[in-house]
Length: 521
Image 1: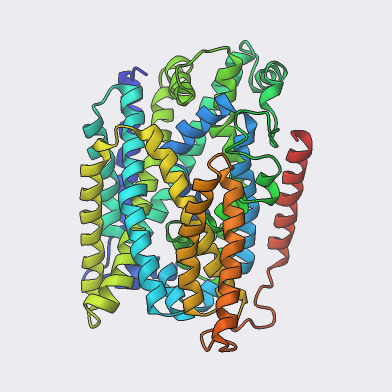
Image 2: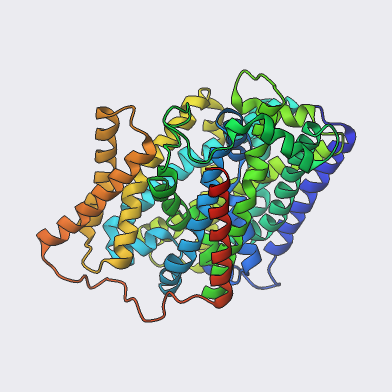
């Protein structure tokens, strides 16, 4: 994609606006200093629009625009099930997870595990999350983002990595979660707006200049085979989307773990003004999720419908931007793609600094650390983790294989982690020993199944491993015979009651999802 001076000007304006907003909201009054609550949880002051927009900005990155468009090209609308089932998952998290988290006034997910189980469980999971966030997530986001920029505008990979890292660091390292969340509101507007423009011009091309609706109609008629949400076993994509399992199977394990137990996502909800504000923010994110396939899956199907032959499916979105977007709009769509990457990097940095500072540094390394020291440690951990990621990112030369490995590795831990959280919520007898056994069992069970049944769909495997982890926790409690744990969560009457508006919107979202699956079964 060749950027004209106009495109570069538009992109530069975007960069200036984001940096200005990030630094502006990061400022403090003369003589005041940020404390840990300000830096890591924005003083628990975030509103619902900021929470919802920031969650979506954190979730969408280069792998969605490039990877899911590529999957749309190769598999079709089936990939949208990740986004649409996520909308329902967010509703569940808002109604049944958030009341517990906010009641306990926690900063991090490991902190919840300590309060519900013990320090061993917290420390093990905190170290795991730090390793995954730094060496897998942050590194891969920078690499995939820089690779995307290289494919679009020809910037050498290392320069792309440094640019993305520096862009995110300028405002997020100093400002903390508030700077990240507030800028994410603008980032979401840009990435959704730019994404919709790309989809519109693709549809207009398919409609021979007669607009979006005609183009969509032509695409549907010529590519009916791509409009199935439930894949048959004969479909080449069945191993990744195994039929009915995407609705009632293992996808729910990945879904609830990602949206409900992941510091990377849930930290915005923890920073809300109140439970109601947090739930409204999560529900807002669920509404936005309904539209995400329109900007990350449909473009891939559009390229397929145009009869374009690609060497790799992941070339679909770059091809669309390079060949369909008019001058000026290219700058907007490039800004949208960059917004998705930068917001994900900034979010990951903040999650890493929060877990390290509040779960490792403060309780283990410096129990009496002052508030200002905690904030400085948080900033320093951002810089160190980002430096590590910058060094490692250019070394990921086999990203296709590496990215599949990342998905596989996450699927090894998510069943056990979700089991630990759910049993911690609702099973008063669950013990720390049972939680540790489930964490270990998640790896062991997953490894055995992959070795014994290598062709078994990973999504179905996650469901089986999740059930085995639940059983492991129950058996452990029966052996220990300790009765209800003294750390059990007290579930009070009305704790999970939600507002009338929340319930109405939730029912509308469910109705829309039912309609989608009836239309494109």
